[in-house]
Image (cartoon, rainbow, N blue to C red):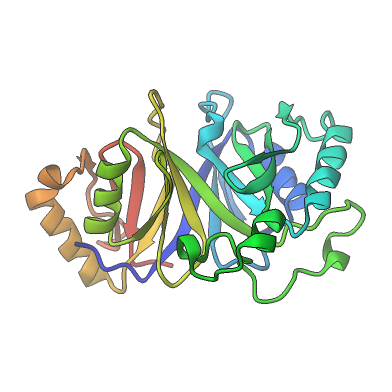
Length: 281
């Protein structure tokens, strides 16, 4: 139904910007694009995807690790170096948990929880790429997301260099139902990673969302959402009109009002995950 031109940004909720922003900039190589009271926009220099960070205060809900975000490094050795670096600075950055690096779903990764309640992954597909070099497998999500490497001089002294902001995650109840909604309603691509996991993305970019089946999961505030970008305000208004008429039959469990002068609206999918439809990049 929608004809998106991009999966342009993701929104994340934290407790306090002053705690979370240093983790993202000093440990994951993000840069602050803009900041105002209660909100910061960040971007990795090697990735077009924007991350909008919302400050929600001490009552912000803890996101389970299956609602995490990920950056990627080039070598497995860097993942090990990241583990050592983060562990040595656990108290400095108030990191609540740091998992030991392990192989999972084709990648070698570590996971940690930052003080704002969000899980992050530092991943590497070195072993996978040694065997499988297809640029198109899984929509190209496992090959490098960058045209040229991010300079180690700009992120020196750590032993690892996050090369890009690659993915976010969502918990879903049924792979087939969610896949149908992402394709037929949101107009995105999906790729079956395994029987319980699909990758969801826009065909023109490599950033993606890992959507994994869970028996139980939480529904979070609209501060936790992904943005589907349409070409114009008129397309946004028309999409809202059509979903108002038939969205419930298509799996929309909640449809918000048009905002920003008709340039955007929110909806919740069959699993009550929140999405934004917008013409504003």
